[in-house]
Length: 185
Image 1 (cartoon, rainbow, N blue to C red):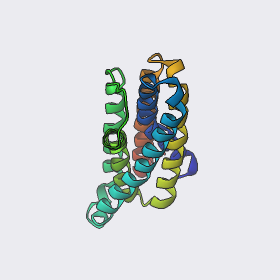
Image 2 (cartoon, one colour; image 1 turned 180 degrees about the horizontal axis):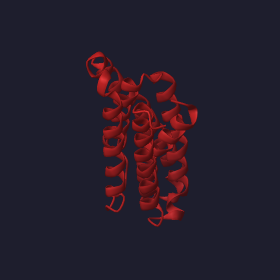
Image 3 (cartoon, helix red, strand yellow; image 1 turned 90 degrees about the vertical axis):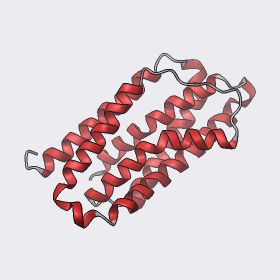
């Protein structure tokens, strides 16, 4: 998998965190928006590093048993994640007044479940997990930070579109993996 595909995956995975950062910044007082944006970036970026590594190592032990079907597994996982992102794009986000450590943990886990599944796909595709996870985390940090700093200006207008675009990119990458491994590309 090339750097372009990894960047597209990183941006796609960051869309949930971006959406939550935008919505979360709406509830923050103007004086705490910058600190809130940094908090979103750090939490979401860290979990986007951790979760693919967990998925990778969980699946890596089973790769020899699933090697003949790996492209189908990657395809269905990415398709599933992408379709869920598109489906959930229009759902209402819960806003909170303050962001405790517990709340940030729950938001970080919720926005990085997709990254866990992508880590499984990376194991199947034999992708360098450390480089990939670090890239995903860094991209997520910057996108989440950006969402937190501009969220109160953008409001709800673009949240749905960003999640839909991220979901579509994951579906297309899954299709590309399947077509490459079946000889059509």
